[in-house]
Amino acid sequence: MANVLGDEKKQQVMTLGRLGWSLRRIEEATAVRRETAGAYLRAAGIAVRRPGGRPAEWPPKPATTEGVSTDSAPKTWPPKPGRAPAASACEPHRDVIEEALNRGRNAMAIWQDLVDDHGFTAGYASVKRFVGRLRKTAPPEARVVITTAAGEEAQVDYGEGPMVRNRETGKYRRTRLFVLTLGYSRKSVRLLVERSSTRVWAELHERAFRRLGGAVRVVVLDNLREGVITPDVYDPTLNPLYRDVLAHYGVVALPCRVRDPDRKGKVESGVGHAQKTPLRGLRFESLDEAQNYLDRWEAHWADTRIHGTTKRQVSVMFAEEKPHLRELPVEPFRYYQYGERTVHLDGCVEVDAAYYGAPPGWIGRRVQVQWDGVRVRLVEPKTGQLLREHLKQARGHHRICDEDRPSRTPQTTEVLLRRARAAGRHIGALCEHIHRHDGELGVRRIIGVLALAKKHGVPIVDDAAKAALELGAANYRFLRRYLDRRPPAPLTLRQVDPLIRQLSLYRDLIERKTGDDSQ
Image (cartoon, rainbow, N blue to C red):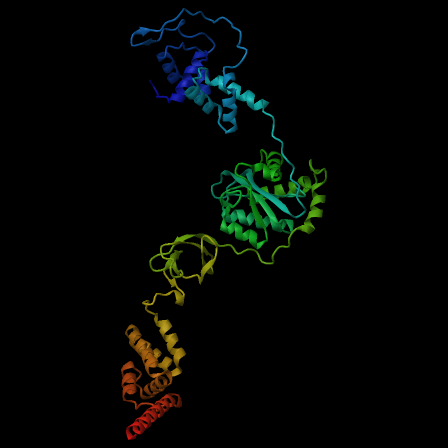
């Protein structure tokens, strides 16, 4: 046998062969080659009918099972015409079929379930005809007309755009049609793009708001990935970039229920209107040419039509709605890239081959990262709280806040020199001289100078550094010896006062002791 068919295809071929179909007709219906279908029919003892004629052999040879003939009464050709049954073989299973149709099952799945679970003996064609009749007789579900206030709501959706020649390949490619329709006036903004992404989806909203001259308060959309990450009718998770763009314009996103596009039937109608009327059967050489054609049609025909529901001109209703739109912000939204990163053992996350520090306690955890050409932001995933914000660094560089550094992290030379300059003018000059003269070896000596300032006091060490610079011995060893040989500084009044109090207490104790002994 040429090919091995699956059980489903094999059953279809057998059923159509028993109905007297020709091999050519079976091939057109099932996409199984005539040679393969004929081999299966002959093996099962089913007569193979030639195109426009009777089977090659009639009556067919009886099918045998292990040498036992299953021949029945002789048959004649053509068969005698009989009266069609009054009811379909599927009628006893009407409730089961209707329930399966309500769950979205197709005719093939229903037929297989009937055969497996209910002992159904009729063919697939019987179920297919019965399902077709049920679908035609099913009463349409009533749909409510949603009325919204002026400037309150807009509905957005994607559709298929026209074929446009690609500049790189020179071939025609199908574009995407973005449609935003206002709920009150039915005014639509239709924009064409070559491909979609999260940023493109958000930019299309901005372009639509700019064309309308204002923004609405609510946007109703599908659960497409560019706008909604986790669909949920009560608590959906929006795409962070799309959410921030809408928040920039003061707009709230309202996703529909899953598989319920009728909530945004106004934009669905707008998409279908553009696909069937101005764009059907047209090809364009560039995207600008297609957009200009669509804009011209929008102004001349779509805006001037009398809407079927409102019975008013769209442009007149939009003139009433435009004053109710929200004012647009002065600056457009600053777009950024986003993603999730894991905080590594060094307390940093990697973005574009650079490293940025996270707060303590986040090692091994996931954080959301937002970055553009200037800044990098670390955001808490659940609450959206800003954890840290850093300036963008070059590849391979680190950016860590001082309070996030571990206690054992060595400080850089630049930080040490900054501390030295802040301690005292001569201390800073001495440390810079040490760094220029000793290079990397002078880093520890700079740390030693700062340690001396902490031990002896900044004024004393600054005077010693001045003396070292004047004598031409600007090094750590001279500074340390100078401070060790320096006579102790006189005590200040703050240091002397506690000593005087202690001496007074000792004197009182001695006087009391002397008086007790004399008695």
